[in-house]
Length: 148
Image (cartoon, rainbow, N blue to C red; front, side, top):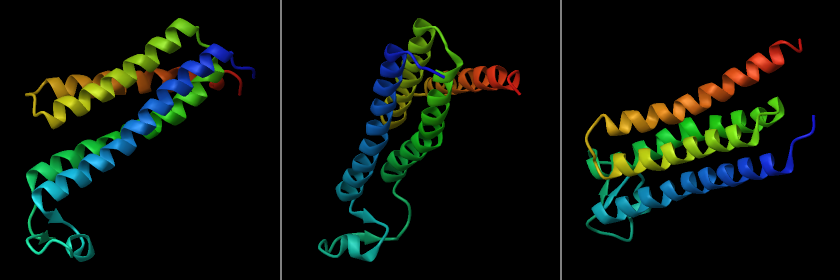
């Protein structure tokens, strides 16, 4: 089960990009909490007397938090599927296209979510990324099912 070096490099770049993107969403959530003085835990807002602690839902905070949650739900499967996909011996051009499609779709999904661009923009970005994951999943299952 050898993996082509260029193929692995393409995956490693996009896996790293998506991991850093997911981490970055944590900072955007924190930034939004400080901007709106809306905190979940008492200790988080102790130094800010005007802070709202655990009261109500702030839509701006929740929007960033939901985008981050959506990344977690989609990027972690990509990391697993993308790694396993390498062992199906895909063509470099096909794999690179799938990885680029997923990365672009996830970045676009966050942009349209955070900037409140009307639907179906967010749904299209979501389904493009989901399609890439489902394609890799299909290739993995079809390749290794025949080996059983």
